[in-house]
Image (cartoon, rainbow over all chains, first blue to last red; front, side, top):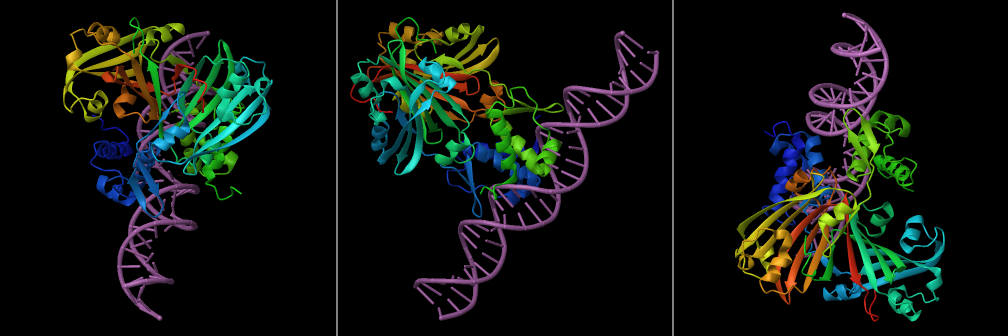
Length: 240
Length: 240
DNA sequence: GGCCATCAGTTGTGATTCCAACTTTACTCT
DNA sequence: AGAGTAAAGTTGGAATCACAACTGATGGCC
């Protein structure tokens, strides 16, 4: 069986096994293209393809001139969503957090308009934030709020505070989480290696049944994980 | 600028732009290898490589004999975490949910032991669940609980219920979310196309400061998104 | 010893060619 | 007309060769 499988898959699977089983520790060198052709008796194309696939999967990383090595996957830093702060999370692991904030006005894109339940192209206050850890950009966020709430305070990191001051009582936050391929801009700004996906969090702040602010947060999958703490489900329906 | 960029990137970026801008609608045919070589004046290697990259990103899908087409990305179905059910979510979109449950005993792996705060290799009850939507496997879950809590009920979908019956009061749930490349078993069972990542949710049920159950839930990124509903952060610290 | 230049090895990219398996279309024959 | 067949086009896999840019190590020179 598995005899008619593509040749390069044999190489991929053997190396992947060695990596996941710990036989090849992080940092360990991977056989070069030439060595693979000899060891596995495959052509250069297959060897190259195998290495590309493993790199794409994030298991190994290649540098021109040096070779491929098993990628050391640093522990994924926990980001405590909604309740906590980027800065708190970073301080907890000894990083120096900073962020750039730019605010301007714009017309709501159709999807943003739906999320904010306003008419498309309504004016919104748009805030772009680049979060940095020790100077390196590690997260992006774009926040939108109907312009009516904005009072000129440009410290968007205090949304709830300000909105609270405007007589709106925030009741809950919803977060929609999915992973996707980064857009060119994103992999550029965040300096993402090839193959790394991003977590996309669409967050909306609600005051009763009215959305008052929504934002898109882009987080590299290879550095962070999201942590949610929720009240236990009531006795009746704990499924999944 | 961008003159020294790899040739295949020019093709990738042009096609990607056309797709994301909606110029090429889902289902629309992508130029074939030969057509690309002519239209963009590149070699066959570059054309093929460009198509491979786009396929890897999930933007297009190729079939032997037929060609590449823009992938129609169905809306990502929302999974309401922790509060709701797989079955509720599926019924909401007209799918017929089912699941397979298999329970056995095992020794706790090191990481599981840490999560349950028990000694490594302690006996645990392991439950594997395959969730299906209209018969197709769409989610995997493996649940672990210290064997001491198990009373023989094999309906693991009622964890909290049973644990509650054992005099344990569940207080909260934590979920750690990250995306990664599927393991071979996972892409096999879930029948994942190449390039699709999975969301990995490490969920732990707590009774006070004691973990009583932990599970790994594997969710395909191309079909689902997670939805969390959280209480609004208190006035003082709404950051991020 | 310390510094610098050279060189072999490696990756990323690319061209060219070939083939098997498959799909779609067109055509021929009954 | 309908059925079966042939041909053309497409993807995915693979081999081979080539080259620029880069790295690490070696060895020679001061």
